[in-house]
Length: 147
Length: 321
Image 1 (cartoon, rainbow over the protein chains, first blue to last red):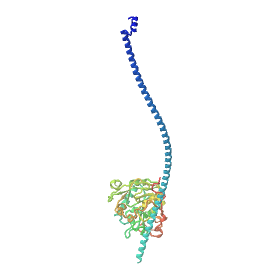
Image 2: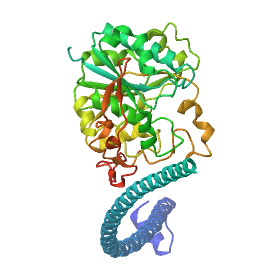
Image 3: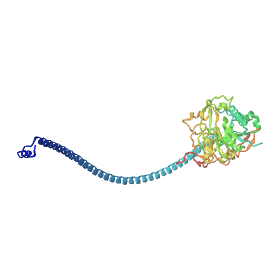
Image 4: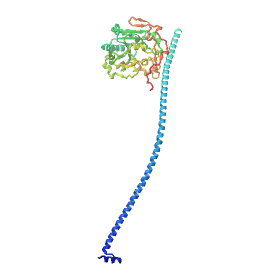
């Protein structure tokens, strides 16, 4: 078809069928492309949203962990202060225990010595009692002999 | 006469203690002398008869008759006047002051080493071998006392039969530092150590039990090492001994014929006077050849001397660490 005819048809709003077909195909293609782009846009948006959420989540977590770290640092400092305090108390107690052990040893020594002296005294009392009995027996024997 | 290497000090009297005392004594003495002779140990037997039984022959004389060769050589016999027992006793229930009697022998024994034992104690193999081999002076030697079962046949004694555990009633193990347990049956030391320690406790005479342990306490406290000689001696068990009869006095421990079983023999020491062992007793010879320690108050220590009861310089309990 000549171009003059195409122009005349076009003036009355008529296009050749082939042209129409071609245009339709192009339109379809464009529509498909548009759909694809739209889909991709949606996906990209969704992706972006996802990444945004992840970023926000990570930011939240990071912020939380920073806060935790700060808190942990504070706790560590408090624990260290407590540990020093307990260490001092333990040292003081150890010293007390050493003193008490020393006093216990002294007390045991004194007790042992007292016990030794007590046993020596009891032995001497045995002897005194024995001697009195012997003297008593001798006296009685003499008294019987005399009478 | 050449000085023997060993004096064996024993004491006894003719009183049928534990049944056939004399026969038991002679059997044991024969065995011990033979073993010592086999190992080349020259020895003197020092026998002390304490508080002899009136109207009975002196065991010292019977001994000389039983061992005539010994009597002419190395048997030294002492008979102690009975008045000494009456003067020294602190407990009328004690009929025999065994350790004062032993001191009489210890004071007068002549050999460089003195073994103080009892008339019913057989020397074991290791004991004789140790004595024959020589032991260092300065140490007090002990031997565990294995009790032979009552009624064991004494006619064929040998080391093989003595070593047989089937014949033993007790086989104690001696423990440091004192190695005590039946110590009255075996204490060997050099003469100088015996004299330094002045023998057994003559201050506490209210008991016969524990005096042997008390000697070990004294020796240990004075710094003498005490050691196990390395083998046992064997005691011929008999009725009336402390070990077989002390159960009868469980409820009356202070009324036994050995004195108070619970006096503090492990915790006190003593200082015997200069005249220990009746050293100042006048001596005269008896017709049978025994030396008679006649009675003289000069030889008798005071009835009680409290200042001679002392604390050991070294206790036997562990120090507080």
